[in-house]
Image (cartoon, rainbow, N blue to C red):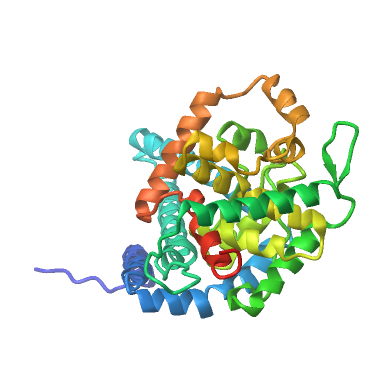
Length: 387
């Protein structure tokens, strides 16, 4: 005879307890799938040039106006904190996963680890989505072409005229700079305010430069930046412009302007270099203007030197000693101090790690670190005025 027991309230609770985790897991899978699909679709849309152009011109700036304003409230680099936090979270994920092998029978620990790994997964997708919105799509938009011509060629004579003009401007401005006992430039004004003003001024011709500009922030780990030959960095996941705190006074304006140009959607290094040059050299402040010319002098001079014979190069105007003295990312006293510092990690290790990260980053976005290509944009800029 079959005995049928009446269902009690406790039986219902057991059923609910068993089904609840399955429901939660199903919801999590659905959410994760949709979230990932959004990121993938946006990456696919980024391959459409017109979509990327529209997004960068009309939508990208919203992140600076909202999220950028939020991170801008903090006096320190939020992006730097995020990087450290990410490394710690990933390390913990590895540790917790290894411990799970030995504690898999502990239900509480198992549930905790699963939840933690789910958190890591969602965080990873979020970072991927943010990088898509703040890097991948802007990288895919149309490249800057001032004359709207197809690869116009310029002669060494054209470049010589541009080089001469920039050296003359540098020479004139160098004489106006206030200097300390070591000959280094002193500026007693608000450099950040002057740079932001200069950037906003070029919005008349380039509308992306309208709107909010965050305060550039120094990196606590600037010594690591020095070891890896990095003077500035744009953090897309925090919408911040960051700089190496050891940076020379002469290079500070052009470097921060360069990073702020990234915040306005100009991801390519040559374009950021050009807009830093354009903004700074059109400033009303001689110090900012001088930094703008110094920021491109090396590229112009080096490209001309590599394009002509030694005799031709020596026949042209030469860079004065005072300008050469100013044309450095770090002041002499700073270099001596840093070179005598005992590194936590050896220089070659830091440089190797930085190169690996940079190469991976550039390969992912299918681009190259084209800083020197600013020469071509400057030739376009002076086309019709200097030659």
